[in-house]
Image (cartoon, rainbow, N blue to C red; front, side, top):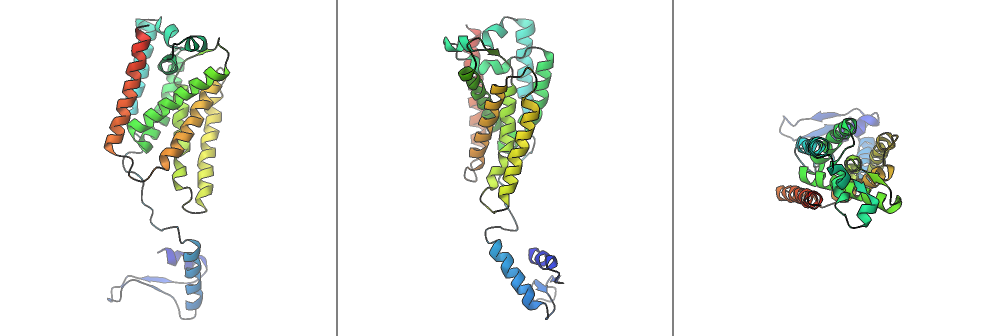
Length: 274
């Protein structure tokens, strides 16, 4: 089939014989076109010797992982806890550079569970469900969620390093930008398989960058946390997509879920007992 397309592109008429006469499949051309057809096919095979007509899928399963709704429910739960049940939680769990430097390290994690108001929560959850759900579908539910979560932590670390001690912030937007970085990096899996894939990789990354500019530079946003989360997600995604085929196993996903849950529990334990 691909040889027939090659010949068609060169203006050579060809027919695919399905071998009903017992001779087997064949590509039939006229005698006068035979030398040109053979030359075109040889050139095609030479230029595409590392590129196969059929490409194996790196993973199977859903493109969108609906388990991201567990994350959305977690965000809603902590919003209720910090605004209805115990409003004082926001002050002890938000990202406060001076407090973190004084030893309250858990704020790097717990700040992503808090939101200033309903509009803040709605914006992060609506974008987060889409971006994180897609990232979880691509890398596995637990792995995608954990990678985006750690990317958000790195975003908070960036704010700690470059903002003054008086800086305070909260929200899951750094984690959401981490999910965007994971999605932008997924095309890196095809890098090096064929010269033309380099363009697809560049386009995929640039598409993610454009979305980041649109979503991550709004007025009143924590730009450093967004940038740190996005770049870290991009790095994590590039590493994950270049791992050997078969690394995505059920036990890998379960382990990632356990690590994510363990981090939530450990940091909240330190936070709530403070």
